[in-house]
Figure (spheres, rainbow, N blue to C red):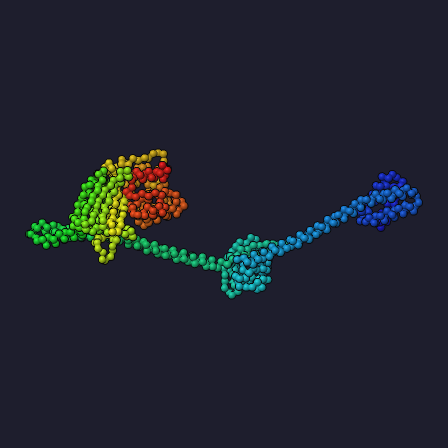
Amino acid sequence: MIKSQLIQQYSIALATYVDNPIEFGLQQAHDMGEQAIKNSFSIAEWVDVHQSALKILLSDQKTPQDAVEKTWDFFKESIIPYEMILRDFQYANSTLQHLYQNLDQTIVEQTQDLRDSEKQYRLLVETMNDGLGVLNNKQVLTYVNNKFCEMLGYSQAEVINHGVEHLFDTHNLNKIKEQLLQDSPQSFELEWIKKDGHKICTNVSPSTIVVDDAKTNFVVVTDITERKLAKETLLKERASLAQRVEKRTAELSRANAELARGVRLKDEFLASMSHELRTPLSAILTRVEILQEQVFGALNDKQLNYIDNIETSGLHLLGLINDILDLSKIEAGKLDLQKDTFDVKNICDASLDFIKEIALQKNLKIVTDIDCTVNTIFADTRRFKQILINLLSNAVKFTPKKKCIGLSVVGQKEQEVIHFTVWDEGIGIAESDMDKLFQSFVQVDSSLARRYEGTGLGLALVRRLTEMHGGSVSVESEVGKGSRFTISLPWKANGENNNNQDIKKLYPLQTSNIHPSPLILLAEDNESNIQSMSDYLNLCGYRVIIARHGKEAIERAHEETPAVILMDIQMPIMDGLEATQHIRADATLSKIPIIALTALAMPGDKELCFAAGVTEYLSKPVHLNGLFKLIEKQLHGI
């Protein structure tokens, strides 16, 4: 119908084209062509329309030959746009086919990538260390991995497409349902029932996704049975440990009370024994003296010899009692030094006189060498004489007949130190026995068949008394050749009393207002040294805190963070070396300078101190002005 109408309309247009100007006819024909395109006519159909329109026009026999030619020209002109459309269509079709081919290739490649990715994710899920389960909105398991099955003892076929009711007791079933109903479920602990009936404790981490109103839950299940068992065991151990600590604390409290009671009883016992032993001993020695005076009549030589032996034994026993009491007083901090200035040569001569008779009995040669620049020293006369006599007595005791012993005194003015050396040509001391020398009641030869008598108190007293004077003891010895014991004490060449009260005059203090008052931690157990050192450091402008053993030194260092630590090496509870190691291991304290102060100068002591981490090493007696300079060097690099 539409085609016949177009033919009719086009024939009219052609007739109009004959009777009117060409432009009008072309416009009419063009409009008809557009209408044909809108009605989806092909080029062949359009040509048919033209031919039919021409036939109608020619059948009227009104159209001259030239009109027919013009109509044909019009037809040729009007068909050109359709040829162009056809070419564009053919190009577009070719391009589309090429795109289809590329799309097919891309789909193939992406499908393969998707399969590879799916394979990797499946491998990851199947080999993960935790169980994985997927539940739909009806709480039915649609997928589980191998670990899930391994934990519960089921196969995948036994749990997939099944509900979870058989995997929990009522409480845990309600718990997991409540958690999965939440919009943002959190991790929670859950107890599962295995196929064999045993229960395992797990941590469940759920997540939820919703697609087209269908809710899917993913649960990652971690077996924490062993972890929870370990935690419960740890809690039990802690409770048990707390009980043991409480019990041990009570035991230690009782032990401390017993120890304090023991110390008190020891002091009481020593005081009592001192009285009980001295009283009869004093009576014995008094009667011996009376008998020696032969007040009651003349005595023969044998009787006088017996009396002399009684006196010698009594005096020996009295010395032993005094040594024990002195050592006990020192350990209790109850022995006070009565310092004064006295002549060095006189005290040396008096000490040599004490052992001269015994040395002559063994035909020993006594050699003395006293520095002429050394005149006086400030010390406790009685205690210093006790030090020299103990060393000289040992020299006589351990030196064979017809050998030599000696006493030398050397003053070092610059270091402000005086050295008293007692040497012998005796049996010597092995390197392995050096550590036993200064221990109370310990002898190098402790066998029942030992050749030399003694209690092992002499050298212990020598060390303690030397330290109380602010000095140190050093030893050099070789087996079979002899020994050298050196006592080093503080000394002023000008003879001034280095009393603590006059310390400011003796040492030229170099304090100034340039530096604020640094805090010095003094770790020292000897009260006499604590008093003298702290007084001097205060006069130098430093603030001083005290620690009386290594453990307290660590605690005070944590509390106060001192600028410098002066560390004595031999202290109770914890020695200075161990305390230094603890301080160096603490990052907050490791940079604090530590100056070691020790009364021992044994071979290897200095190396041990540096190995423990000390910054500087000073051997007692300490030159106080030199100590001040060393502290300033550590504080300010001057």
